Length: 457
Image 1 (cartoon, one colour):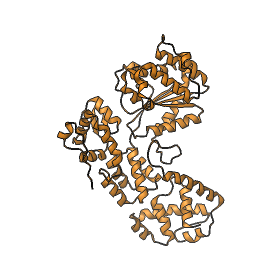
Image 2 (spheres, helix red, strand yellow; image 1 turned 135 degrees about the vertical axis):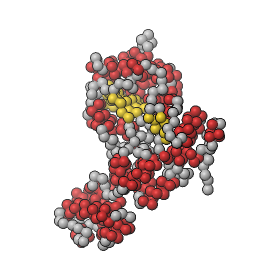
Image 3 (cartoon, rainbow, N blue to C red; image 1 turned 30 degrees about the vertical axis):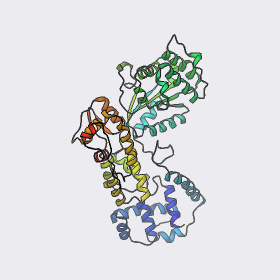
Image 4 (tube, rainbow, N blue to C red; image 1 turned 90 degrees about the vertical axis):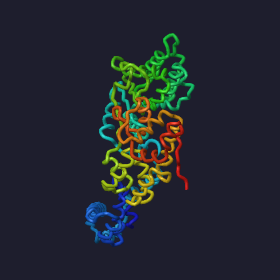
């Protein structure tokens, strides 16, 4: 075997792949360098290098079926040829590695991606819940927190259990759909029908005298659910999009709750497993006894812990110390998208400590990796003077700020602030530094001139 084949074999066979430091140790040992030299060149402690090397020699011994250590590593391995099984393993790995290397962190993390980080016990609790007849799960978290990635995991589990699955994204509906309840519910039913590959038969079940909500329930009970032999997991995504249309939301939410309650007495409604996905607290005046958000299983997605960030680093081939993890989290917290974008760029540059230092230094500037992402917030806030003022208060406060609930919930749903009770603070230090740097003085800001002073040159 060559050293390149050794590296590929270990990358393909190890659950966490091969870290940058492990690869450095292998290649440097192949060249005959001492542990002292390796530690010095890689900027790691010699004791750490020796400990990791000992593990590598054990792994290589298992592969070669004979004892391997640093001194006999190259001579022994060069005399071994890759088996057909190992050749196939490397071939499959190269296919996946090519796809992974191009996997820019945008949108949900795909099912076959090694970059999905579980957040126990959330997944297992949700898996157990969708197996329950007539269940309702409410998943709430700000944008870019991993809601869509979790949904993919839940739907995959449901499909494996033989359930039918449908996802409705309210954001995809034309504005005209929200002009009346009847139009909206007909759109709702027609879309579920199409997703189930059933011909829409709205006119056969719709009755003006009974009203839109009753007609919708009849359509589900006597047509859609009756046509299914297995449970249906129905995901209602971007539910807060409906909050903008209070008349629709004020009717839809009690309707969804009524379906959940029907399952307690009617077996056919037990086929329906509902998942509501949204970013903010409900902003629609509605009685607690009519809301679906205070029943069923509530799931709030928290930021990554330090251990989860370290796990994600390993999956990117970065063998990070606690200090590096803490440095990154001090700027971006445990926000999945921000953390993963950092790793994506660091891997491309080698992932050394100086690369991290440069990334952190440039992060809140126009030259930083988050600049395009942060500009989206600038544009989103520019037309919302009340939100502008509220956010400006938060990023300039030395402590927490108490905002009007509607403003606080909107900023929280955007992912810009943390909200604990009625106390608002910036979601992470990156936002505080960036917006402080690029926003004009509060006088200009409060005059409605939410202009950004981007530095050029």
